Image 1 (cartoon, helix red, strand yellow):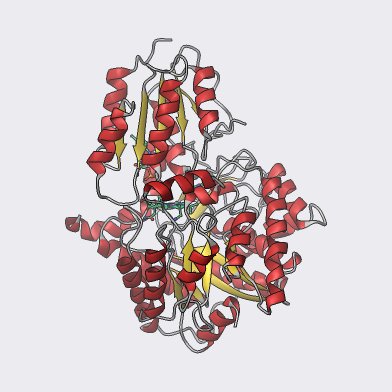
Image 2 (cartoon, rainbow over the protein chains, first blue to last red):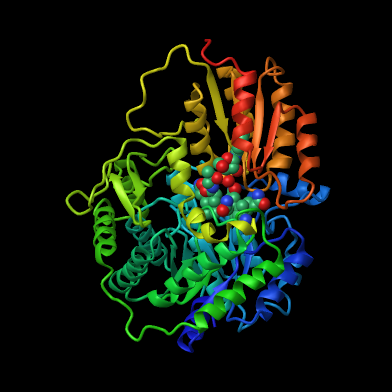
Length: 416
Length: 156
Ligand code: B12
């Protein structure tokens, strides 16, 4: 069974599949983390998250840190010898425990080569979502790199496996991007993977700031995949909140329980969890296991909707308009994506990457709903409701970024 | 390539006479909300800000500081590599001709764990930073005080 099949199989048998964002530089610790994930009281898949030096291709810095014993924020899969990584996975990776590599690189070829050498074939990213939020690589270069990476990943079919790719487009910068654009980018990246020849694909959406709007977004994502990718084996993955996290453990747990409810109610098959350490530092293995088990228990206690919503409402209408406008730009999807950013048909609020137009803006309503305040050249004129606002200063920006933290911490502040 | 953050689609008219500041990430760190926030904050403190953006290679940072001669350099790192990236970068900045006396500060979440925070800060200060703010609740207030005390705002 490949990664995608496994997730759909577990989900069909009643479980929400849960997964950590875990990565340690030390192979012994990495192995212990994978084993603990596997043994957790939950339907899990494993994760190897890579460190930032590997993400930007600075192998010298990763090597220096390994030699000096300086802590890294992830597993340096390119620097570690392939035998080391195989030993990390030996007896852990199995039919019923697939492992995915999560990285955040716009130049992913070395990473893909290393994970394939180690016997893995599931990873994530995308030409847009692993470029704009992850550094200064030009978008056109990232598109070319991701096309080459897809081709490389497809070579694993020679070993009789079906490789799996997940879009990161449903997250982008994590915060303050209205859901329709996140859904549109996630779908466009899935189409990109599919046109490159991948058949097993998951599409992501990161929990934002209003539960009703989030549910619409997950529904829109499912609907667009059914409409535009009927031939592919797809599933939906929800990311627990990707912005400033609550500082109190109880506040964090309540927020992450809402992510579980979003996944279950929205008909998503998989959830990537966050831990109570999120606001502070890289979580320990024990904190990851606690987060996985908390998510699984929350999901088990919740009835699955007999008939999940199907329309996707306003988020669907906006996302569909964006996807169509981008696809109309050029027959080659990679080219269409580059053109769309150049023309501002895709424009991520507050993203300072040089290839992002930077003319769209957003804002949070009192109830956390994300609204457009300025469209720039997004193809949403007449469709999106506009709430014009003055440009924000540092205090208003921080206040919007910490809306979730504030809301969920409020009842528990004595704990800090 | 320099990337200047486009926070406002109608850039303010050139603010002649204002001191200049550079806001920047370091080579391995891709986070940008910190940079967008710091750009606004430092502008509000009276500076004209060049935001070099995320994942700034050491060479580009040194070169930009030498060309621009800013009155203040604000480095930010939150990905947990700030300690080692900071030690490497400050050596290069202080070693570059003419940058020995430039006010340079570093803040964010500098390590991957909460341990040894005081030692990290002391080591970074010894290496040449004028101030270091490692994920403390009063970081922004202390930074404002530092700027008010050390940097001549309002004089060209
Ligand atoms: C959003 C986010 C992302 C987004 C970033 C998108 C973007 N382009 O910005 C994405 C998803 C891409 C991302 C990626 C990664 N992230 Co991240 N991310 C976050 C998150 C959830 C919020 C950060 C944020 O937006 N903050 C908003 C700004 C305004 O706040 P701030 O950054 O904390 O800055 C404040 C202070 O620190 C301070 N400050 C910052 N700099 C300076 C400088 C000075 C001089 C002063 C005075 C003050 C100061 O002022 C700010 C206002 O209070 C945090 C967790 C959290 N905080 O809840 C993790 C977090 C920062 N990420 C983390 C990591 C490790 C990563 C990754 C390496 C992936 C991984 N291994 O998990 C990659 C980074 C890749 C790379 N090359 O660097 C870790 C860092 C761990 C650590 N330091 O120990 C955190 C803490 C999560 C965690 N607990 O593991 N991330």
